Length: 139
Image 1 (spheres, rainbow, N blue to C red):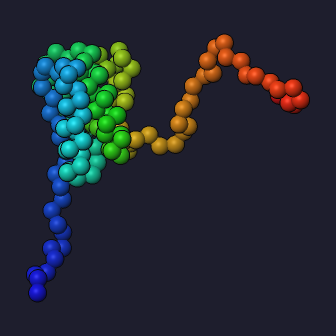
Image 2 (image 1 turned 60 degrees about the vertical axis):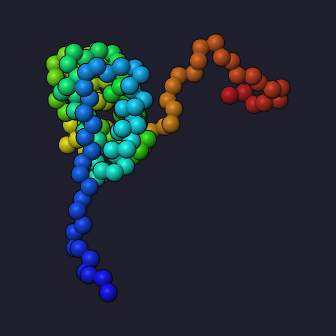
Image 3 (image 1 turned 30 degrees about the vertical axis):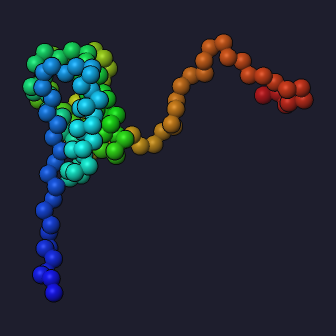
């Protein structure tokens, strides 16, 4: 006979990925793999990405953060940034990613996968004409 089951099994710890300087383009894929592994063995909720050790941020850091957000979204998770300061925030604003990458989890979406809307929403390419077959009704 086995012993009684514990009432409340221990919860997995939240996922935290720490970025340090330098973040290179070659490292982005490895960071995405690390985020995937962390997300799979951690508790629910967004993955925290600590950017406090990045130093002077550049566009490679922004690219890494955007790719990490996409990776988390594919896993049904989101990300939230920790220790994002002035220069990084200004760079994110300049690239248009500030709201997507710095919104606090308390807003309810925690940068998770987007819900609703169309899969693609884009304008029709200029110069593209639709063919009309004889006998088709006029639009």
